[in-house]
Image 1 (cartoon, helix red, strand yellow):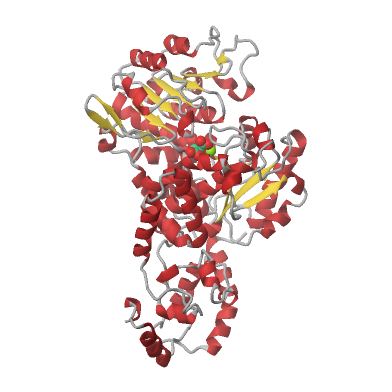
Image 2 (cartoon, rainbow, N blue to C red):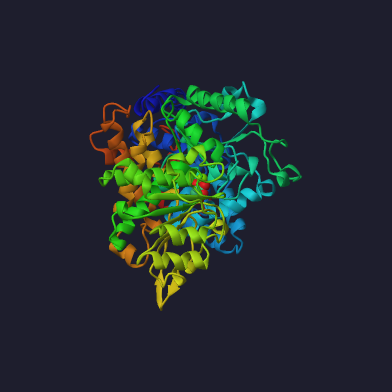
Length: 621
Ligand SMILES: O=C([O-])CC(=O)C(=O)O
Ligand SMILES: [Mg+2]
């Protein structure tokens, strides 16, 4: 396994051959007199991957990683052999960003906006990521939740080009070979799904591919993880969604899901093939696996691989951060609340367990902490006395109390101060439930975390209207501002996008071996610290989405420090300044000079070309 530094050194020295060949033809340019800088710039553009001599002429426009469109300077156009392939105009990246914004605004339908952005990513990667990272509030709901949910549902219709790998159960025994087909050799993070629980939309089979793609877009846009280091994968083991099996547009395996031993062997082989191909510290993020697999696979692999489950641990961290910030409003310590979860699946258990850890940190014993947490699933309250007992995955939250199947009655009986929805049942927090929460306590905490918007347990407006505006509300998907009593509130989005990009950046930057649970508690604390008095005043227990990039870096720094405190980091020497180290690992969103090493622009050609185009580009004057 190579350290970060030695990996890039290898790539750089590997690429020197063709540079030398070029240098023998071209003499050194006086304008570009720092060869090492030129080399770094060129490789920055190509992601340390593309050998300059294999990309010729028009391929600089066809490769989204290299393409700058009309922003190629006159010198670049000549040096790269693309002069004349572009219109005469020279544009800056900023001008191009303006055009992108105007183009997207022309679409009314969010799915069309999504398609525009997909196409942009396929055409000009830097422009796509800069647009996204500078307009997070505007475009996050398009490339991510909720629109990405719709994109998954319509995936058969909108599928154009490959972005990521599809590995099917029929590929069992050959997974490593399929990974070899992915053109990027320097992958550091893989987000993968088997499509069985896509957001709250259920089994979408191979249509689930939109989710790893969307998550990894956020890796780059929010945390600055380099795109060539990211690989989205869908593990296609079939689908139990009858509509999809009958859908003529369906692009996945047309068969029922494979389960049991064969499925487990497939996942085992996949995990092992990933580290064989990309190294032991490759980050493997589980995304949108169903309850039956999510928890047990996390348990199985968490000490063997560098892995986490975003729906369990990422969601837990963002919810606990919200609970921590809410303490400043409710004036109740975490350990003074009573929690009731609607849903007892992976997200609920993840949040509940991390909340217990946070209460233990406040001084409760684990038993005392667990006593404060109740769960309600499709069969009612998790009571040890109910028929069929408490499901194995939520055993530690079962209570020796009278069974109850009516959720409203449960809210009245248990009197929770925090109500947390992870049920994927849209509207499950009825008027009665919300009004009861207002009777339970003066400042009830209400989280409707199921995604996308249609699955949220209640709207932000309903939560305010039915609690006399006293609630502290957060949702997994965004809601428009709430108007209550003449005042406007901007409620927060308790979505794991506040957590996973930062954790991933910290883990990748330190080549961490494993991700302990405490890292997510650290991430939660870091996020909670970012919540300002101004945020709280407008009803928000999270920083604004506009701060997501800053938050992600802050989380990455804390994760990186922790990685070395716990002996898990493996980039040596240990970085002395973590902040600087993290920033050095990040992607360059701005265009950089795209000239071959030691290129010389002949003086005579310079003059001729400038004359022939009738104008000069500012970069060349
Ligand atoms: O993708 C999101 O918005 C959050 C998430 O992980 C899920 O709901 O599964
Ligand atoms: Mg998810």
